[in-house]
Length: 608
Image (cartoon, rainbow, N blue to C red):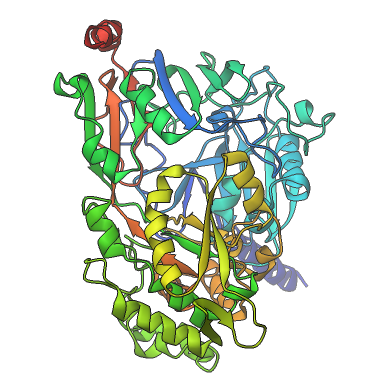
């Protein structure tokens, strides 16, 4: 009997030891591989840990705002409002995807990643002095899932429950162990104060200054016109390793302008301190001004290694005229990138050939053996060209004469059931005319869209270009009330849950989702799940390339262009760390040089 008890006891000890061995407790967690910074790290290598705090910087935005709640679909949130809140973990900008503890001091998870726990730092406090608690995390998660922006439904849809373990620890249980990035993206949850929000209507826009936990507080604002933030001198995380040397500006002000051209002139006159130029024409021609010649302004083209995603003319395939893939492909022949780049962009751009452009996730050439392992099971229902042809957008000679390209477009349209009647492209079956609207939010895109419109009209297509203000534009996007828009599908180095929001069938039916195209495709849904469940970096790369091919050959967008560099301009009041982050511009690591700032206003005045 004693021997039997000994055997049972030994088994329990061994079994318990195995269970304990499966649990990881760490300051950080990586998607694949090991974190760059170990548990002893004091700060990120691309910051200056001794950067001085203080000074004032003025940034800018176009449009307006009407809300201090960025977590709901309704309204337009104020620029910079994210600086009021902290997350359980925070990522570095020199790794593909690693999260380090922020509100959470430690992260705990099993090897199969079927759950994750976070232990809250004792020093983590709200601006009003209340301690951040597990109840705050649980309330935040449940509220965002029920009442927040539709994005959260897709991003955290694999979370089964959130429970309190003790007074400073919470646990997220998952529906399965197939979504290996879930412990990391749960850490990205912005935590909100339950005691502030629980007696308020979370789904209503509000201009009441909220309570946060981040480095900045709202100092003052002019509704819809400007907002000013002040660095919290008692910010609890200023010496946490992941935050050390960041958030150095004492005052951050955002000024709002009606449109980009007015905003640009305000910068040149000295009313704004920093400007990211998104127009190649203005980058080349608009800054030959005395301030630049006298080196009061800095003008820098800073190369980066960020994935560029896909910017293009995006179809709303909920519309009958765009349901046929042949029609969408036909319209791509009417966009002359080569002429546009030469005559409008000063040859500044490269043509985009992938939804994961400028990264190892981008497909190219014919599918590799590894990619075929993802694609071959669906060979009978996928476009045949995925397996036989290299994808490239139509290319012209740049002369502006597109007879061959428009002829190819006409053949595709004819095969799709359209014919020219009295100069108008008409459906052979319904008799309906081919006409649609390109909806824009920036007047700067009108000069780019007009040549495209002219080429479409040569095909017998009637196109209306309409530019509206940012609030109207966002409302129409949220409700999928458009035919075609210019849209940028941004990507990270570690795609995952957000792909459901971009391309997933459920998202196509949910207002406010980023599936603005309206893609409802079983194969794409399955490939998204392959990405989410990828067990290695190699699996992630090849499953992403497979998805990329299906999206490209679906002709859901007409690809436009990209540049792998930041076009930055700023008045010479800043200093920067000697090492620059690989995957961001890193302005949150800059600081004000007080000796420069003290004289910059005088120098600006001398130029007027």
